[in-house]
Image (cartoon, rainbow, N blue to C red; front, side, top):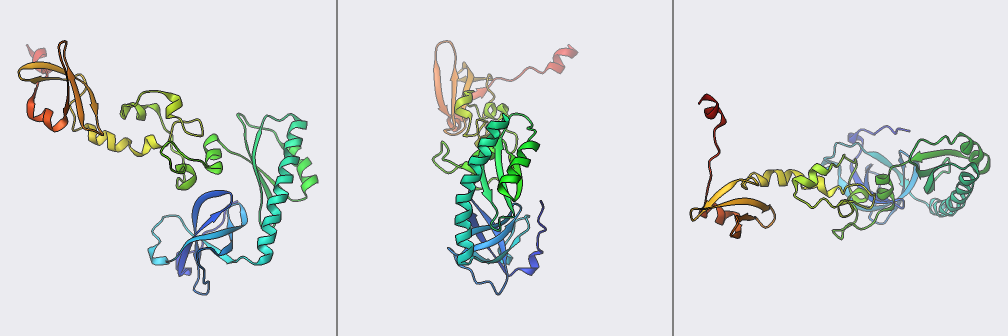
Length: 290
């Protein structure tokens, strides 16, 4: 289901809102007559349907909004009835999850349930699940519809989507990027780890989702740029007229390791530039002419 975005010029401001299902903050537009503060529960229309959220930042003037993403409106401040309905929906979602899990077992479907959520107006209940292959859940839909008496949506998610929904703490000690600010998941290849000269230890380079950590993407361009300042691995340098081979570089500490059969040196990049002269490469074109 797609929700049409409201033109920005219809709003005077916007607020940040968080939902129980995700720790990430989303922005929604507000009009002049809507006076909201941090901590106010509000009702909004999202791609999943009507939901109850909590204002966590703002309000901000609409002129400050620079994102390319459009804004959906805050429908209203949540009433006591909205809050009670939301609490009841959470309890009913637990029951619905148990019912769905039982029917999955009865039908012997190869799918792993992750979560269940009702929209605020109970017009739809959404089940999220993991599966290695496509699942034929037509029979499951019939059974659930007869027992839950509302529209059913079964949404297959990937392992990264699961990590985004569940959340957690990364190796850096901060909340997972996917659950805090990432909107899309780009493909992360092992070549980025090699570019950053990391030991190819897949378990250590994998995130909560079991795939390569997104951190590899964030620093890759910087590593590529910074490595241009260093001599190439395997290149020959002369220090005090003695030949050495560049065997390792550390972009973070700017240390270069050079060695030969008798000696090993660890030099700061700037110090290496002062002390070393580089062995000129042979011009293959001249060799060919000869």
